[in-house]
Length: 271
Ligand code: SAH
Image 1 (tube, protein in one colour):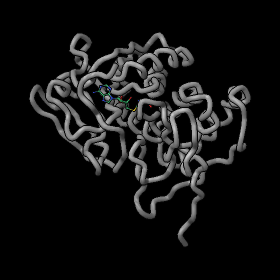
Image 2 (cartoon, rainbow, N blue to C red):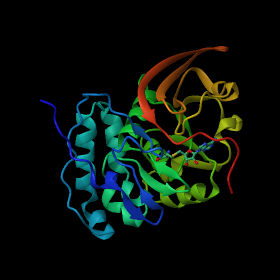
Image 3 (cartoon, rainbow, N blue to C red):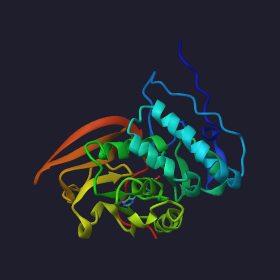
Image 4 (cartoon, helix red, strand yellow):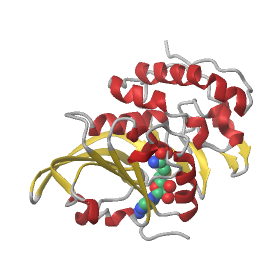
């Protein structure tokens, strides 16, 4: 029998200071960083959470909510306990608008302003698991820091995290948010176009791209170490997560993974 899952409240549209949102599990959304479920794919029900709690209460209860979220991620196929432990350390409710704090531990993307989103926890866990597949890299470059959440999770595992954001307001937001994460001193944030990479800190054993382009510039791929891994969503309407490995000075392999939906990777900066 086909199992019916309730749509999270958030997916029905929530008004917050960023306007009407249509995110959560709503597959029609054009503005989310989420996995797209395959037909018939098992989707465990979200753990029950109280319908309303203040940010203060959420702060007090957030360990419990995070633990429930992690159980949900485990049930949805995230197996790397190092990654789950890293997610456990980061108070996601501190990275979203106060009005959305009660949804911070839903497995959903949420708006962060500037028409961008904080990625779905499943996607964050998946991308980090992929770059840590063989070994935890000594450093990582993240392109598209947004509100800083993924950079904060990365810092729980990886000693040096470099993250670039092209929207000035988000870069400022990420800088402020990151203060709420342990090990924030491991993170260096940059305002700029991530398509340029960070040549002064290259090469990187791992790169995560948090926005979708049609392809990636060679100058970015060349900032991987040989044996280094890059994970990125590629495509326009139909996007897939792609894992790229640099196999030699001028050779890379590509593995196309599951369908996803990300905000677009854009050139240049926005003040
Ligand atoms: N990593 C974030 C997700 C942010 S959404 C998280 O933790 O939830 C993707 C972000 O990529 C947006 O903030 C967008 O502004 C940014 N972005 C898009 N193109 C970019 C580029 N060329 N360089 C840097 N950031 C870019």
